[in-house]
Each structure stands twice: as C-alpha cells, then as structure tokens.
Length: 254
Picture 1 (tube, rainbow, N blue to C red):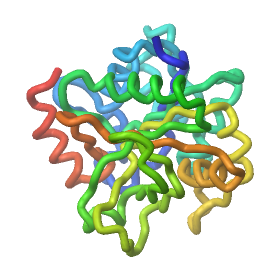
Picture 2: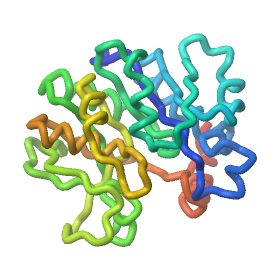
Picture 3: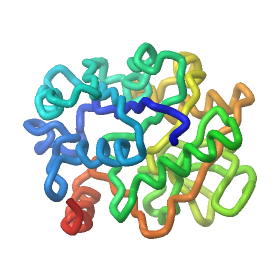
Picture 4: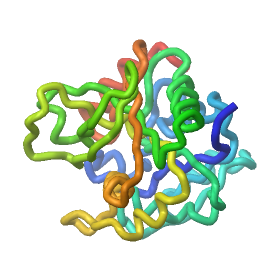
C-alpha cells in the first residue's frame, strides 16, 4: 500500500536539447523500445499501485492527450508558460487536493526489472519517517554532474538512506568526490506548493523543482534521499547522447 494515490508527470517543456526531433514529436513521446518514453513512466507509477496521474503539457503537444485519451485516470492539463518543471508542478495543486503526491520527470525512465520498487521504497520511507519530501538518488561521474541536480547529503541515517542538506542544480563545478544526483523521482507533502511559490527562479526565468526542495529545507523541513536499488539504471532521454543509450538499454524491455 502506497502512502499516496496521485502522481504528477511534468511534460510541458520545450524540448530544446532534442531539436529538431522535438520540433515535430513531443519529447515525452519519443519512442523507447515498443512505446513512448512517457508510457514507461506511467507504467512505473501504475505498477507501484498509483492510479491517478496528472500530466501538465503544452497545447501544441496534442499527441500526448490523444495517446492517453482512453485512460480515465490520466488528466491532461495545459501549461504553455514554459516556466520550468516547478511551474508545471504548480498547476497540480488542485489535483493533489491536500494529499501527498509523487513527481516523476517525463524524460527520466528507469531500465531494469521491477522499477516500481523505487516508488514503493520511497513510500515506506515516507510512512515511517514523516518527512517533508523523499527523493531517489544515484551516483554519477563527475563529468556528468554539470547536467544533473547534485545532492549534498548531511547524514546517512541507515544503509542507503540519507538526510539531504541541499540540492545544486547543474553545478559549474563541485568538490564532492563521489557525487549523487536526483533520479527525478520525488514524494512530497502539499507544503511543496508554498515552497515553490516562494522559491527563486533561475537565470532563464524558469522555476526548477529543486528550488522548491531547497525552499522546504530553508524553512526547516526534512528531506530524505534513498539510493537507487542495484539492478536499476536511470536514463536521460532529454538529450541525444542519453536517448541513444536509453534506446540500447530498452531494447530488451517491453
């Protein structure tokens, strides 16, 4: 049994890193194995026992709504703000209706067997510890840190479970010898919405979800992080190199 029943998949980005492909195919709908990337994310959420899903997307990405039009538990919400993932998540405040909720990015599929165990593990941590947020993290090479949300960890509470001190969005340089990054899977209390409303936007005017996490921490909240289980690999289909690697990995999965 999960600690929550609703999930948000932000899918309202412009897909700039994937142009010209994303000029005629919405980035979340790029094929990966036998189905679109976004379908893999939905399958992961459903396998964990969560049925109600909100997908904030752009009005010119009608392919997403058409693809899921027969699924009564998926709600499509238009967000043409191009205001970043945090802005897209903010559109889900009414949908969440005061309950805890999951957020997974639409370009971060997991390859491996039983991917749902990540969400299920986060739910167990949430129920046992009552934090403001739980996130999933994984190790990345230093050369990759500049394109990830790098997590600075305060304490290791138990094996594979950490307390988060801060998150650095795409740092120019880091001093951490073995950097850990977000897998773009988060479980939040509704307090995130106020945190996002008070968080600072980046230099491009976008509201990053990590800014909301840092605002929760600044207000004295607790954010816990759990390590990605062995046998699972997080992919990034938001750039051509990552998409190519994901294609190779997902050839063996449905």
